[in-house]
Length: 294
Image 1 (tube, helix red, strand yellow):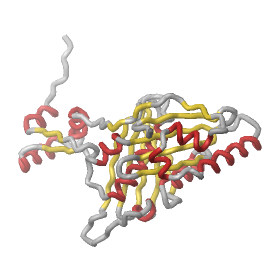
Image 2 (tube, helix red, strand yellow):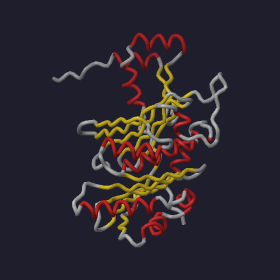
Image 3 (cartoon, one colour):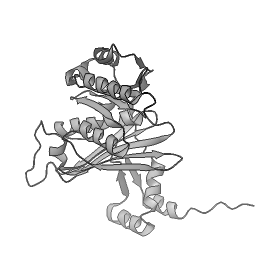
Image 4 (cartoon, one colour):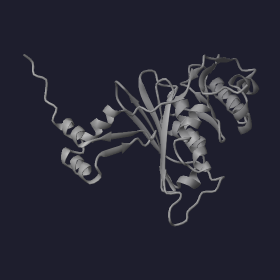
């Protein structure tokens, strides 16, 4: 039976290769249900959510991983975030239904949808230094772009397979870690495992359980599969965070919006949650008196 909304890490005992496998079902559907994206874009968006889940598995402390592509095509941005605990959210921006009549075919790949552009992976720990790596999108699909990213930015050989349909998004990653054994043996191990992974078909990823996928590929290679972690959709927006963002706009501009529109209405781009601020609420933001110690 197919796993749903879980991520699992695994190792190959006796090698320097690690891996992750993830399946998104309800989490994927919950996110795309918030947006009226065409099917092609929803599937590509699902690939980014899978990528964020896989890369987010490496978080060792509270924080967030963001996978974002930016291009000059009909879709200008696809972004997915994974915070600690496998909490996912994301957004797509573009002009795929623009007045010039541009449309997207059902089989369009990432490069056809986004054109030329860059792929960025950002790691933001709650406590510590923010890191971002950026590379040119050097492949037609996200898996190839990610493999290129890890080779160029982190000097890590990586193999990624992602499959998405209307209801499930699944991904498998293996990665060569810094070599601790004989170099030639490590090279042979990687070649063997990556060749096996190339045989995995998209329909197998969408219907087979994690155990069955790994057995199908690596049943002779001493795979050690770890406990599953639940994956879910979660948006971190809140009234308080929205208020803090509004303060940066200044009182005059906000009060003018209240005068013109009756209130300030902010809609979260990730989850469509709306936050309303009246004229009195705006004034209260800027008239809060400091606490006086007696």
